[in-house]
Image 1 (cartoon, protein in one colour):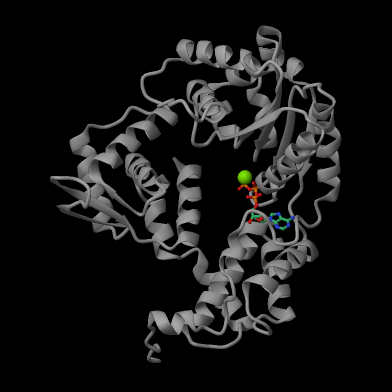
Image 2: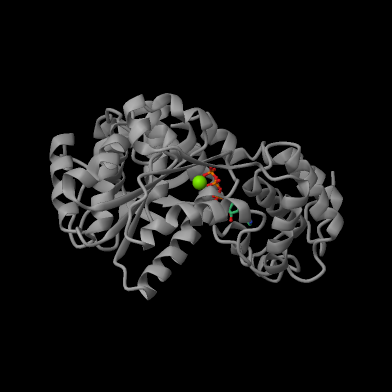
Length: 395
Ligand SMILES: Nc1ncnc2c1ncn2[C@@H]1O[C@H](COP(=O)(O)OP(=O)(O)OP(=O)(O)O)[C@@H](O)[C@H]1O
Ligand SMILES: [Mg+2]
């Protein structure tokens, strides 16, 4: 068997391939979103009334994974905020990922948290009536503001908890005299089936669909990133074309095309090659799905996933056992699941350690005066993002 070259951190740092790997995964492309002008124009037309002080009751965006929905809307929102500022219009926007907040109560609490960052809104201990009352109270204080709420991955809440939150948002203007615009984003065009007729009629019918990308579009998208992500002359046109071709024949998903390109690059670095070749593409493509961490994650049980997700969601890479339990309980609340006992969760943490997904040991944590379980995340940030997404989609 071919002996693999030994790697050191220094050799990886000195690699001839990457310039800035993070660019490959940035939500905002270095030169803006490509091939989305039509969708962008439609959105601009829909959202422009906000600048004329009239709220948009609801705009809905649909599209397969990796078609640029989240990224494009967040970048458009920045433009909208700037325009509002230049025209002295008070505008506040809040973004909620509904896969992380699957009940009306936790969505409202998340909106509240963003509307008033000074106040604490812990997800535990609130029932729906209390959250609604608080939401209406806070909204009344924003009477002169244009509020824009984005509910991303809304399919999760519609499927699991129904459309109450949409109905409430569509009626909130009458109730609180506040200008609320709602944008919902979903993977599933059939999400309409989960929206009751009375909500449909007050929501309006604006629908914008993001198609999957074709080969040429994917090529342009990854070429744009490759310019920033890799050193000069590392990726040939042929390689970019191949990656674009492979992914266009699947789901036309830009995220996956970028991931495949990154896997090729990683392979080239590991083998100490100075260019990415077609062989790397073929090999990376066939091994991508077999990525061991991902297949282990896929096979976790529901509560193992909830625990792992709670750990990865923390901003710090090192945390204490009790933080995990606290976060886990919040996650369960958001996902509308009954939490297990602390003891069970502790054994799930040990489990995750045995599977190699985290490093966990009992020891002294710097700022605490007692011994506790320390938990450390060992994934690099690109893989961590991928795992978080996979967990969210499969819980
Ligand atoms: N038109 C585009 N131009 C450049 N980059 C793009 C484009 N569309 C998507 N991307 C990139 O692909 C990745 C995925 O995009 P994004 O997260 O916006 O997709 P999404 O439609 O929200 O997917 P999901 O349904 O899985 O949430 C991001 O890194 C984004 O920058
Ligand atoms: Mg998205």
